[in-house]
Image (cartoon, each protein chain N blue to C red):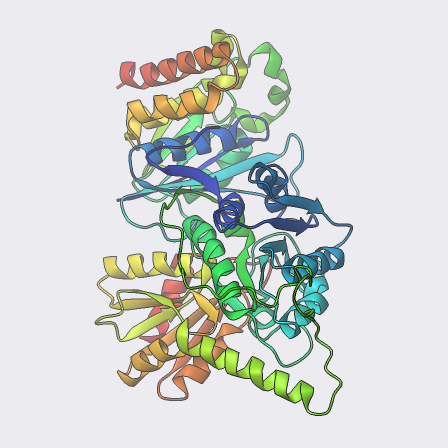
Length: 355
Length: 202
């Protein structure tokens, strides 16, 4: 189907995500099948060779993430994708990537868990995605798209953020955003950061220069601590520089929903329903989950705004919201775990019970 | 205005396709649109449905519990989704296969075994507008039962004006032209007969 019209194309989220990667100049994609992210490797298998990149279906998730390590180490823009159980398998590799400070993009199209769960959309991996995920004291940038357009735009941006901070960057989406179709606008302005640092650490062959080393093993006296302090400084810089969220009707609202991704889409419908009934209800949607947009939430709390956190899990981002609010006002929670999905009417009832 | 609808029927009736065509037509009208398929462990001959939302505002939930409208192409879908349509909404029934006493076309005889198809189900709801169109029969007369979906979609669009006729035509063109001209022709014919059915019976 040729769906182009005025620079717009009707696409499913997973395909749009691939276009975002292609726009960012992603040179390598390594993947392994799992529902509901299968459209990503399927799309990449024909799309990335068109722009001179490499598509490789790995023999396992572990192989794929370690291929990303290799590609990132030589300075290529590399991506892998999977869904929840597959992302768990990748965690060892992600920890090594973070330890070696290698930029890359990892996509998680979440499904229900724990274990194999089911293939419906869920948000059960929030903790894993925002707390590092693997072993060791590290974080990864985590972006949460809320539309098919953002599946494309945030993926494109993820490559720049990864390069800018030399850090693995996660796209945390879910089966619903991955499978649904919406128009996307193809932007012509693709250079987000012109000032990206040169990859003067990449293993490009040591001819005419001293060899470089990329590793995550630091056995020497004081070496590891020094490395970890450096990672820490980087995390603090990220926390200062890139938290981002979207507001809807928060100006006069005394009660505000907080939700990300698909849950934020449902929350938007709740705000529309509330409008109709004359209820002042706001919505704050974190776009970066790590770094979490603490300050905007804190500012609303200081004005006396009370919150209802909505998640497709049983309360994970809730904890970040509570930390941001720090007891200043109430933070309530409504969620349904993997296997369940809420509707706007259901949440409006919950909202009303707190008003 | 936010118009959300569920399109449902048997797998193979082209449910997902008309959902996509409608979404594309909405996009061509410069509206916000969202198409969401029911996906999961589906089986051949099972039921399929998708949600389409066409709106002037940014779209919220892609999943709709109580839609403004529904297009139901078979009896199980009628039973499942007719009760969910919001008051004042629209329900389009493929009366060849759901909720009507009609002669079943030879190639669809198997549905006759299902006594449910003979129930006058929709008479139970007076608070919504019900459109009955024998889409499968009409499609059969055009030469292919496969275009029943387009007949239903065109009739629905003629009734509700959810998208413009021009955009619907264009969306169909984009969806079929890459395959072959004959396919586009019969689908155009189907769209015309669906539209005509509504205009004549107004």
